[in-house]
Image (tube, rainbow over all chains, first blue to last red; front, side):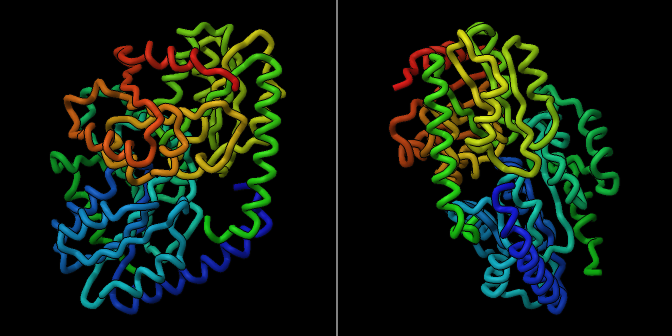
Length: 216
Length: 216
């Protein structure tokens, strides 16, 4: 929000300090943190459900940001990992302070992966570090092939881009080359993984990517 | 963002004053304003393209909010109506002041409908009046049947809810009754219109709704 520039800088500095502390806490306990961001309905929760099941619930912990409801947290808890829900009310993204509170409520002992499901929003989350080691950005095929160009800030922050719901490719008009060209313009380092949680396509590549993350 | 509460109230008051002035300007020229809000990729631009074509370009004007690019504006201009693009940079919603600037750049003479395509975001736009007479909220079927419960603030603000991309109903798991039940909880006055810009289903009901809007 351009109107709050005057106070945004100190707020961001404070946020970055707390994010750095969150990261140190994770590293002290041997975890890596992955901040998962996307528009509403891209499939973050379903991806994390499958991820927890496939990696093994005992290796994972999850923080879930939502305006309201515990629906996502309930789904993730059913997958077997400890889950803490952060309700942001009208807040359009998670903050490092909210994540710090969430971490304090999670039993992290012996776990390897902290997944943070951010609020569904392609704009605001990208500006706020949480203490993650890597950012994963999802976009679903039915959202359309123009989203990288239209929300470049989010894709610039990505360490990996997941194109989800690819099982819908046959019934949608989606120009994947256009999306890839746009992504090459704003972010040449993040790999693009095509996934479908319905068919299971691409999930192994995602798991391999997650398991290759090192705290450094 | 809870952290900016201290200054948010005066900012919102100022925004509301400008929004009221925008509405008076529209009424003085015989237009009604419709603020169209949704997540990224729900189909706002395509809906407005069709709407402008079907109502007649000479009766319409369009303001388009986007972080970057003029892609949506280009598509809408091709439909034949005057279009002004507002690039918000990192701004996650339109403000009344941005709409005031946009209105100053539009030739409104003799037109009846101003459509404002807000930034694709289910959180932030709902908090900012722009001068509209009505709010239209889209959500697309592939976003999932839990979105009303998860983003209630947006749906509370709706005067009409459009369920888009219903041509995908056969290939998606979407519990429409669940969505309708959630909507009844947060907003019992907004009609739900099922549309597909691909097949044309439901567009006449939407046009009828638009044409029944009165400035009062």
